[in-house]
Length: 96
Image 1 (tube, rainbow, N blue to C red):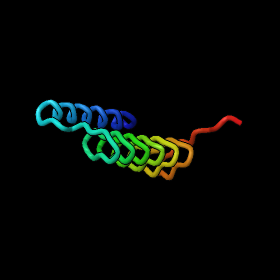
Image 2: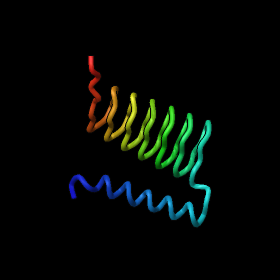
Image 3: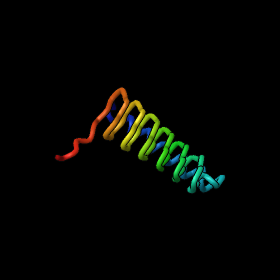
């Protein structure tokens, strides 16, 4: 259970977001400036965020900030990227 809690949280949040999408609606947003459960755009903020500047629990982008972050410039607890500020980080090695 030590390593699987991350996957468990991601699956629970994904299922929660899909249930909310089909019952309440308007959980997905995309565009220049967007803020929603699932957000994708230049400036995105949400639980699952993807964009140039992304802020969220799970964030992917060039500049990303969140708990789990993937991108070039990251600020997170768990991060993967070229420049990462994180408690646990994995730096991508560039071939020369």
